[in-house]
Structure formats: structure tokens, C-alpha cells
Image (cartoon, rainbow, N blue to C red):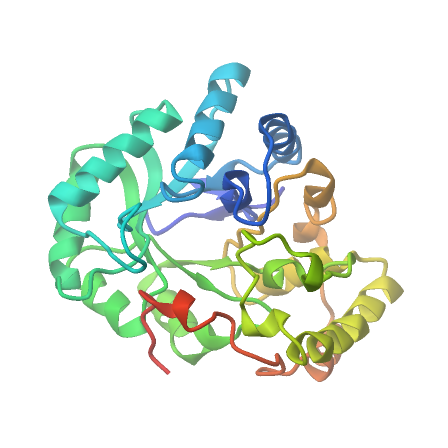
Length: 328
């Protein structure tokens, strides 16, 4: 697995990280043994950094990773997130020093470590200046609890404000062939400031793969259940375009998922995508995406099939946009 640098002063890590949200049952029932097998496969593939959060499965995801590391006596680089108040009404956040310190302490305990390489504010507390939050996170760095920090789902202006206080190691926003908003300022700001950009959902929550999704069979607890892109008539329109991309990938001997992740890697050396899965089989469909190289003709054909803005429907339901910082 090729390596990329995590932030200006962080470690070299695998070019692809494993997103572990589904270990918490976000997309359906999860099993301990299945998650362990997926982590085994990630390690064997050369993936050495995991992305997790306190809220995924209400602590379950972090606990699984902690149990795996204790069982296997191996240690991933870990990025985790806090700032969302669990059990409260949708969108309630706590970015105060006391709140974040309590959340970080809980994460470290569940993970079985005394340090994580990266700690994100998962969602901003909008009535608290981001400069104040940055000072709190800088304290955690100084205390040796975290290697660096970042923010998730924020605007370029917020990154610049935070960075003026202390270097921001990473920004994590959704970015993929069907979600291109970061191209309107965030990618540019990250390059300028030396901040790593971490695209989450680089597989479009599963649609950018060889397995054809059946939204009518999503479980009631599935995170995608009410997202406009997976509702008709949007889903059928989106699937018709993805079908063309699948055929393009197949002609070149690539998996669709591998090519979709390779596309994010191709957007800059400071990008570290975090595709998510809870199964070893799905992981192996894209684990070698860092080995895919595009020609100019390949890039032109991808742009023809999937021009910016091609997706039908919004990426989130109105309810799910609570806490997201919009800038366009």
C-alpha cells in the first residue's frame, strides 16, 4: 500500500484508510466476528489507519477496534471524532473543553490506548467560536493525547479561521464522483494550508460498486433509508449513470469500487479517502485502488460519464443536514 502524510507534522500512513462506521450497525446489523475479519483483511492489505467516532453504534465501533487491537496485539493509526451529544435531540453538539475532553477520554478508554493520531470535531457547535475550539484541541496536542486535530463537515472559511490559531491536520468532508462540493473551495484551501483532505463516502454510500443496490430492501435502521439519492425516481436515474461507469471500469479490468477510490486519490497527494465496509470481501474489492493509474483519456471518459453535478437528488435528507456547515 502506498503511503501519504497525515497533516504537515503527522505520520506517514496508508493512502487509503478504512472507515469503520458500519461496525456500529449504521447500514444494518453488525457482528463482532465479521468486523474482526474485516480488520484482519485491512491489516493484511497494508491499510494502517482507521477512521471511527464515538457516536458510531453508541461506542460500539470504538470498542470493537479496542478489542481487536488487544486480541491481535497490533496497533493501527487511529482517527476518531467527538463533539456530538449522544442520546440528545438531533444536532445537539458540545465543543466545549469539558465536553470534548470527556468524549476524548471515553474514546481512548474504549480503544485501549492513551493517544490517537488524529481527533476530529465531528460537528461544530455553532454558537462557540471555532477559534476557541481550536485552542482546546491544541491543548490536547500539547498534553500528548492526540497527534493532530481536524474538523468534519465544515466550510473553507472555518478551516482558515481555525488554521490561523493552530495548524489543522485534516478536514473530513464527503467527496466522491457523485458529491463534488469540496471542489468549490475546500480542496483549494487544504492544498494552500498543508491540510490533509479526507474524503468520506468515496463509494457514494455503496452505489459506486459492482453490486447493484436495492433500496427497497434497506433495513429500517439503514442510514440511507430517506436520502433523496436513494429514493425514486432519483435512484433509477443515478443507477443508469453508474451502470455506464461500471462498464467503463470492467473494460479496463478494474472493480468499480477500486476505480472510484482511485479517482479520489487522483485529485491530489494530500487526499486520504476512507471507504467504509464491515466485510473482508467488500474490502478486497478496493484494497488495491492505490495501484490504479489513469491516463488522460481515462480521466476524460470519467468526466464524460459523470460530469460534476450529475447526481439526482440531495446527498442528505433535510433532517440529516442538521449540524452540517454549508458554504455554497
